[in-house]
Image 1 (tube, rainbow, N blue to C red):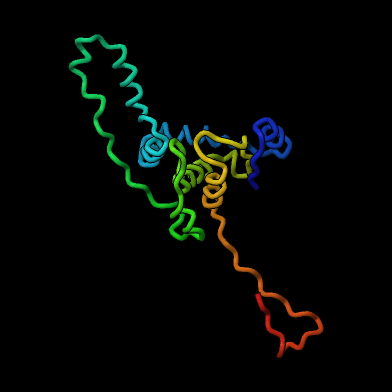
Image 2 (image 1 turned 180 degrees about the horizontal axis):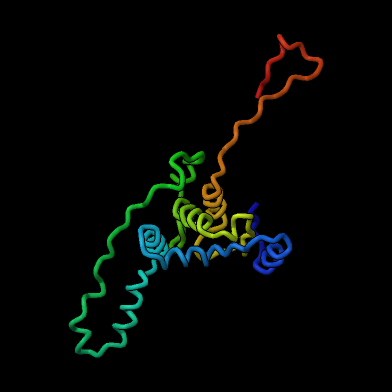
Length: 178
């Protein structure tokens, strides 16, 4: 089961229980560095340039004035990326997604859920469980992380079990109320 705690405590707990620590910001940075739809979306929401664009910007700064005038304009508009589908087609908490307005430079619930889900599927060290390191992250709020993690783990609302009649109740007359 996942738990969140201060980084040092998380490291100790991971060692004690034989599970891997999960650094949310590191996972998000790795996703932002990848090519493809998810990497594009993460970079768009975080407001960071694509890895190629960052390299080009550093190379442009090193070029001579004559070469700079021949370079492509730096203020070209970045194409908007359509928000990809959620982790699951059915969501038990659609109101969370409708009201999801993260702070600037942080991820939406659905995006973070996709990043975590993809990371969990590809990393064997997290299959036996993990401990979330830290209590605050640059890339997501704690509330966003909880909501995204619930989706990434595939957790769903459960219908409550029907109440059992008391031992002395008349089975024909007793009716469960919720």
